[in-house]
Each structure stands twice: as C-alpha cells, then as structure tokens.
Length: 196
Image (tube, rainbow, N blue to C red; front, side, top):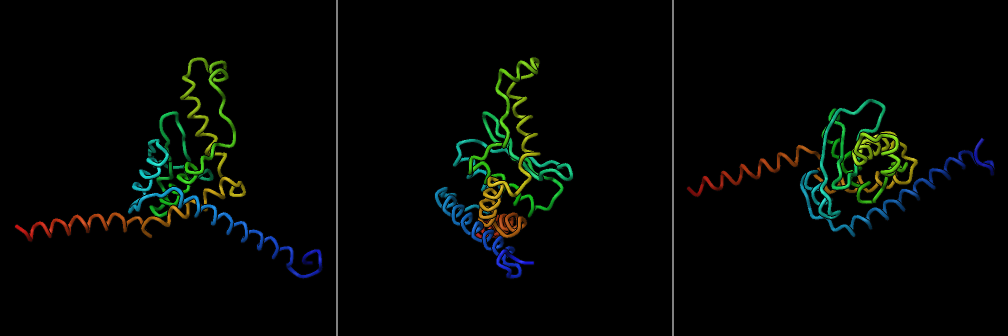
C-alpha cells in the first residue's frame, strides 16, 4: 500500500498537493483577472450583472426557472444581441447568487460551449422552415445544459474560482442587500420628515 516508494499515502498526498497548487494558481489568475476588470462596488447581484454587461458591452438578462433534477443548475445563452443567464428558481437565494456569479465568470472568461453549433447553411438544409438564429439559441442552450456539468473541465474550474471571487464582492446574504436598501430608504424618509 502507499506510493511507489513504499511510503503510506504518498501517492494520495502528491495528488492533494498538486490539487492545492492548481487551486492557488487558479486563484492567482482569477484575482489578477478580477483586478483588470475594475468592476465598481455593488450591493446586489443585479448591480454586478449590470456592471459585467457594461464591461462586456452587451446586455445580460436574468431568468429564473425550475431546472430539471440531475441537470445543470444554471446556464448561459449567448445570442447575437445579448446574453441570458438562466438559473434555478427552486434553490435558495444564496445559491442563486452563486449560480449567477458562476455564469458571469463564464461570460467574462469568454468560455464557449464545448461543441460548435452548426452554421446557417447546415441549419437551413436540415430545418428549412426555422430561423437559423432561433435554432442556434436552442442548440446552444441544450449544449449548455449537458456540456458544463463536469468540474474537471478547465473552463468549469476557472469559472468556479472566478465566480466565487465575484460572489465575494456581494453582501454575505442576499437579504442583506434588500434590507440595506429598505433601511436606507426608510432613513431617508425619516430624515426628510424631521425637516418638515
């Protein structure tokens, strides 16, 4: 038992050591990437989405929907005019924020679905009565649902690390962002009422 040199657990130690090194490198790269983005301070996930959309020069729509069990909890659709992040409506707000940040990381890293979507000529030949752009969106969505579920994939690992860093830019709990805004509005009203 043990590693090739006979020491117990040596081969397991090596793989854990390599994993820690890989994680440190990924964190370093992601932190550097995040610094270059120069995102403004935000207090909610919608603010972060808007900042990323502005940085990318493309609108990003958020859509929540019930996701099928055993499939991806979120995915991105990249259309010719805008991006869409679809995330699971049936999970906690905290997890939803994490999912959205993970998908934002895919967009910021310019990750594409693993499998290419067919070009217009191929789509027209096979599906002559459908608009190729609609078919491309549907195919892209289907590929996202099956293509981004393995964390051994370097793009998934990169998105998870950068997504976690993006999530750390937000308040600890989603309700803190909402309650902070409500408290601020109430404070403003109280202050205004005192002046009357």
